[in-house]
Image (cartoon, rainbow, N blue to C red; front, top):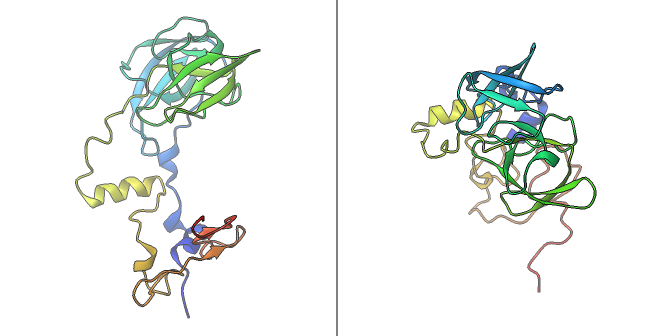
Length: 232
């Protein structure tokens, strides 16, 4: 009798393939009130690539990605129109060509875009009505409401890729905390019991077309392509 291949095992949701909750204890969000806030602490979170800053405004405490140059005890402004690194403003109050991160897709959602270490987008241009164009790092434009909030500056931790993990064990624990599949093994190198592409008697793979609603494990190869083969 065969066994579940790795895609099926992960889809089943056992303890072996479940993310560690403590890696995501800190939920990134924005406060609902405006005013002056203080940076209480800089935190290393296993579930985030960038360091997080613990910020207090009145009696409310929230977590957000730290900007490049954050200092513990620093004061930042939430709301208003004062333009300084770390201030959280609505897009309509941010000058054009400014670098911004942790951008809301919809007003009040707490930030959804540009949250990885070293990331930032550029407030590109103002459109008709209360719409603004954001230029992403891949040179694509995203149109957002001027009432969406964003943080001015660039996220800290841009040099995270400069230092190697050195050992496979360090890499394994890092990926384990975020529930990422690592190391990734080529399907054709597996045994036939472990993957539909396994064995192969000479590794000559034939293209496989899988249905979009196929279960994990059967959904390998081309996923419901419109066409296959070389275009002539």
